[in-house]
Amino acid sequence: MTFIRPACVLALLVAMWPLAAGAAVPIAPEPSPQPEPLLEAAPTNPNTGRLVVAWTKVAQALARKDVGEAQRLAFMVSAADWRAALTPGQSTKLETATALTLLPESMGAHVWLPYLGLWILNAKPDHANLAQQAMLVTGALMDLRDPSALHEWEVAESTIADLCAALLWVAGTPKRPLLSRLTALEALARSRGACPLPALDLAADPQPAIRRAVVAVLPATGVGLPVLQARLEDDVPAVASAAAARLCQGPGTGPPDALALRLARQFAVAPATPEDSVEMLDCLARSPEPEDRKLLERLARNAPPALRQRAKEILSSSR
Image (tube, rainbow, N blue to C red):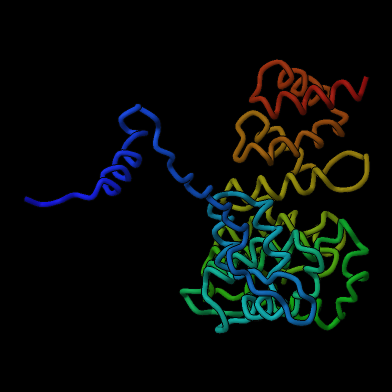
């Protein structure tokens, strides 16, 4: 027979007493989760102490369509990484595309203008989208609606000349993809205060889309006037329509060009392109002929919304 010490039995009963009495057994609380840092393990610049963000973080914010966050993060990308992203062959396509997307709204963007020319002239087929993006960014940064921007950031005249030459070369090179040529002309249209006009012979380019784009860039005075007048008789209605719209937007308040007025009457009733027809209503407004006034009144009553609205504006301002 095994002998059990009374002291052991007593200790066992004391230990089991809370369970027998229905008391709750205390449970150690689980540690509360710690919030994840906004930028996990983000390195810092040893010179400034500021956080340095990689382009992948910026690209992720853009993918979420959180442009504000992407711009905030792009501000923390190092200058070396900006330089690499804007230099062909030194970064991934994603990094370059991300940098070009955010560059126009970035503080000090004009200092990177010299790097954009390398992309504009890049003829690699797999880089065509990046080249076109660089052209549009160039046009945005050289848009002289803010004439002080280039001067304030001390952009060299040689840099402006090089970028203009690159855009003009792409626009005038038939071997470049059509979309690239059109994008170059679009960029030239935005930077027309900084860049010279494209070659006038492009107005007779075999591609109708190029002819139309060139017409949109040319002024309705000086060297552009005879070119626009010649395009009024273009075989492609969209080109003739663009030329008429440009002439109708020309300076002065006198009677419009006779052929432009005839096309304005034609395209007001049967638009080749709606945006051109809206601009051509200025020709009808400057016409001394009663029939053109009646046409405006008819358009104000019954026409597509944009035409109707513009006709109403013209009629109300002439009362």
